[in-house]
Length: 256
Image 1 (tube, one colour):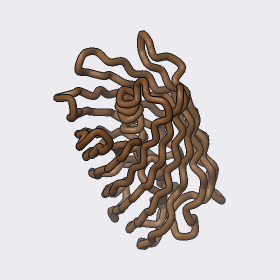
Image 2: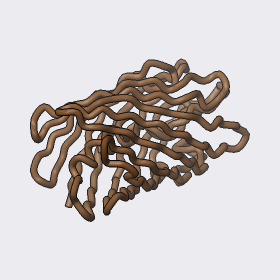
Image 3: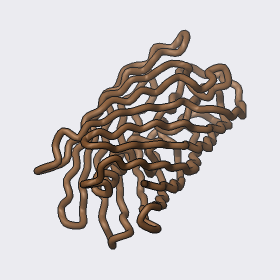
Image 4: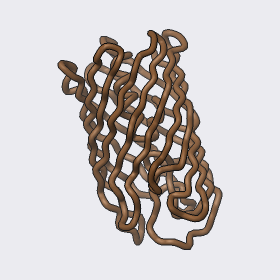
């Protein structure tokens, strides 16, 4: 999946994945990639994050199950913790700059295809396990839980999609994070049988007093290299201090 690591492309890839797997019973997809992002997040120093997820997804019947195990390397003020989608900017100031790397937060999800006509509707849940080391600023050290609905419909070469979700954050010691609503609007466009392009706008409410809402736009290109391989590249532009100034990445996936 594209920037599955960001909410926007999670929705886009559900759309692409369902169209690819229509009629398939027991489809498994293994993927890996590399994601780089940089931003100041309202601070004087920038934060750079390098993120490498290894993802396994299995679709059977109306169910889609997924597990993401990531590596993360982060350089910047220590109140910017975690990787895309799970990134948190902790309140306060005076945080020392650091460079740390290691296992990120493992994420598991399960989605059920409620409707396939006249439009597609997937409903599911996601758990972010606090496996990243909070003492090194790789994560909050707490579990997060999300409920999410994904809506999409193919209209000729276009597939508009939308996501609406609610996320409950686990609070790090001494920090009270707000539970938030998030959403995505976008569309993919099939240029040719192997090539799809798309745009997705991602929004999330502020998770702490005095912090911004997430607001960012992602553009991506997906190309099927063969019957089993797919390559995706993307770029991200953030519009608030809760989003990176820019980001880019690529994902290589194999389905069988």
